[in-house]
Image 1 (cartoon, rainbow, N blue to C red):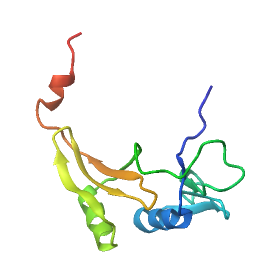
Image 2: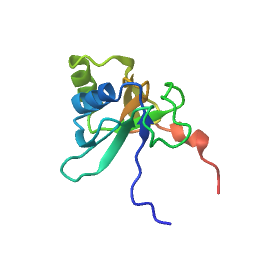
Image 3: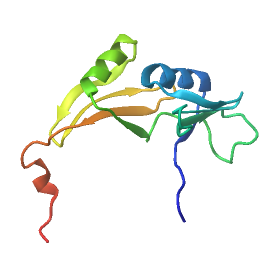
Length: 139
């Protein structure tokens, strides 16, 4: 099997609020939209990054109740986390884990989307010297 593409499709109580959040804060474009589903991504390439659907549409597969905000983290890697954090704050996004340099080699901050999905925005940095040594095993 060869996976051709992969993206999360989240059952959202307010699909339009979720759409607007990713368009406003992360610059995603609407690739496809109907009254029950919206797909967001790069409008230039058509590559889908994330999708949202309503919980009440008859084509839903069995079981996708509206997401309850538990157990999912989407990581978005950026070139400059500090700048991205400042822009999102200016746009009114509510950051619940403020910008921090982590010893394992990330500068990051965290927020949630209107569906309750946790978004971890990261920039890769140099880890603290020796930090990863504790997880390495001798060959």
